[in-house]
Image (cartoon, rainbow, N blue to C red; front, side):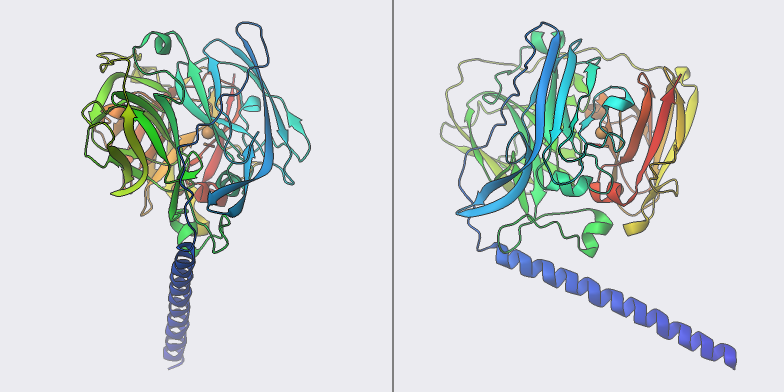
Amino acid sequence: MKKKIWIFIGLFVIVFIVGGGLLLYSWGVFATSFKKANNDTLVTKQQTLPIPPLLEDKNPAPNKAEFEITARDGTMEFFEGIITNTRGYNGNFLGPVIRVRTGEEVSVKVTNELDESTTLHWHGLEVDGENDGGPHNEIKPGETWNPMFTINQPAATLWYHPHQMHKTGKQVYEGMAGLFYIEDEVSDSLKIPKEYGVNDVPLIIQDRRFDGDGQLDYELGMKDSIVGFEGHTILVNGAVNPFVEAPQGMMRLRILNGSNGRIYNLKFSNGQEFYQIASDGGFLEKPVRMDSLTVGSGERAEILVDFSKVAMGETVELQDQGISFMSFVVNQASDKVYSIPEKLTTIEKIDERKATTKREFNFQGTGSSVSINGVQMDMDRIDEEVNLGSTEIWEVGNFTGQTHPFHAHGVQFQILDRNGNPPPDNEAGWKDTFLVKPGENVRVIATFKHEGIFMYHCHILEHEDAGMMGQFLVEP
Ligand code: C2O
Ligand code: CU
Ligand code: CU
């Protein structure tokens, strides 16, 4: 008899908890839609696509470069007459493009003028742990950090962003991110568009939510902390729905998904095809023809798109899942004629037999319990020890109900297979971030050439901040 009563009480408690949860959830949905409604009163400022400035190299010596970056507060006018508080590097929102060459010795002075600690991480750069800018390289307010490194990898479109423990999502969201270009002899010799901001154009794609006052809203609802942040408004280079004047010819777009959590599926409104020429870590061996491109947060892709069949004066829009968020106004006579190169570069395949160690990384959990291999990030715990110079196979699995982008610092991987099948052609190059679908198993290989402590994590920043991250130590 007593047992029955306890079962009854137990059921009651369960119903109470589930009911309460549902109520909270629907309130979240309601509150979000209310905010969205408020948003409709904001009038988007019509503007051309902002092109981030190229950062000046202060060291005149050949083969050496010196840069200065300051993290600071700023303001932007995303909407007519509305001042939005932001953060940026050397400016109000985002940062300048740092452009270096393979072999160059680089020194960067990073000053923190914010009222909180930050770090500056070089996403995709192969450098030692102490120059990587992960959570251990904290820059306190008013301090300057001076990483130094020699560029030791091929031409690529990389990026930089904060990596402060538990604050990466918020700081990136407020505007802190920038691009980092590496050029080399291969990129010099290719006959592809190279005029910065004219026919070689960066597209930093980020989604944001604005509150009724037009301020950036990073209050995480239940859905945001479970699946990652998704905003209603997509910004490109810090502008809402911008347009860019395009040549009636070939354009090179360097795309960065700089969003906190959203995965994009990009297409052109006229359905036209394009060619992917580079993945995260550099050029693919050959251009890959495609008509849609999936990019997870943190991933990059360079594409060539040929507008020569678009009528003068016509507009082509760039869309995510069918919704336009920027447009190309084809109104410039193209003075140069480009063709799609047959071959871009040579990528030496890392031989699987060279691998001395195999490791498994499994995405697990949900919400505040997200983890890799069942453990959450702890600054004082090294999860994996890797021998300097060794080649390893990492096998990444996903035991959750959603897709996660896996990223590791200080290395570039080659994808061996996805569920035992060779990766698609546009993933057959260097990758530092790759999507892993629920139930999928992705095997990658890399040679670890740099010493120090590095992170591996989910690049949905809400997951990273919640602990879906671990550390590996590379040592001789
Ligand atoms: Cu793009 Cu650990 O970062
Ligand atoms: Cu990184
Ligand atoms: Cu994740």
